[in-house]
Length: 140
Image (tube, rainbow, N blue to C red):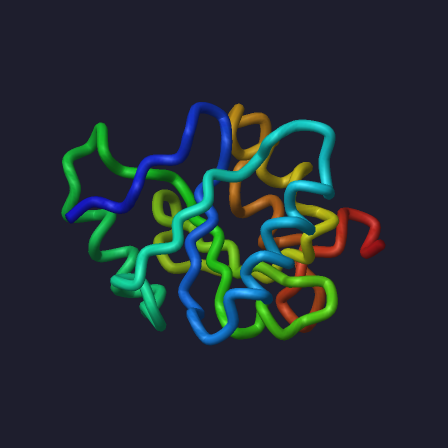
């Protein structure tokens, strides 16, 4: 079964932790408040509970080419528990399985640039700090 398709020019935010509905609501609220425009298509389907990155890579690779997506952002346990709700960005295209963390405040910039192919996944991943978290190109 292919991964859900994001709405036009938004990024797919896939819930993988189902332990706290209030935390999921807080993540969504933080993402919606982070930017001026809608940047996320939210998917909360129990079939993705605890899904591994490799399983997503495999599922996307098995889909028809027009059903494949470029990247996905996971709302996992670290996202739900962290004060800045760091999503896990996953490359599904160029370097399938490559990841970096992304605090909510940076999501609109990353999402917009990836959605219009202004920048590629590697540019953001390469700018991640020693913890694997993207905090802007100046480390902010």
